[in-house]
Length: 261
Image (cartoon, rainbow, N blue to C red):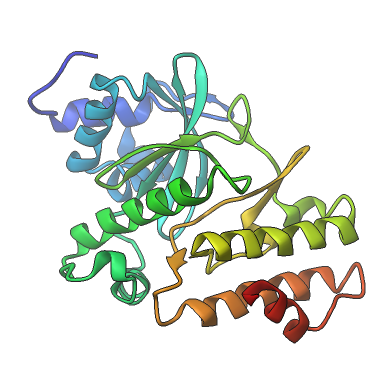
């Protein structure tokens, strides 16, 4: 795609309408008659975000946006293509993000010391934070491989097939509860040894295929964060709570001491 100096409202409508959903390509629908498309346009594809996507395309990081994978309170994830390979496009919302939560998490992270409380700048920092966390752990722990981040758009490896993500552990359960529990605890320790705490780890943020993959690292923080050990405790307790329905799990204190060694 050639470089463009600006995008009109009509061009924005065309781009959003042309996105492919899992059910097929949306064509010849007016935005005002399709509340879902209108919501996506107004909450996700503002002018700045669209220009960021154009820039990523111009720089060769992205060829196309293919389909919507999931929507969330803070970000939407789309499936895209880069050199015929699938990529995950995580677009953090600048208009409707959970501003208070983001501010509380990021202001305690020493990597972002001195950042202003401007909503857009905080959202950009939130995206950069997830990228930094993934860059720090992806060679040691199974996570989506980070590609690049620009403003509120994060590109990373797509974990799934043809636009369909691998299932969450919450939805299919563990394959081997004892083995999976031990492996997850070992990964938490590996991340701790690297200097990162996930801070939001649960069965909702683990994808399962032949391997287990940790996802959603935007809340992840460094050990220098004064809240890091509280977040670590929460992660461990979440995993114990979930697996206690399948196996007899060790006590929290035993696991906590093992990780901190």
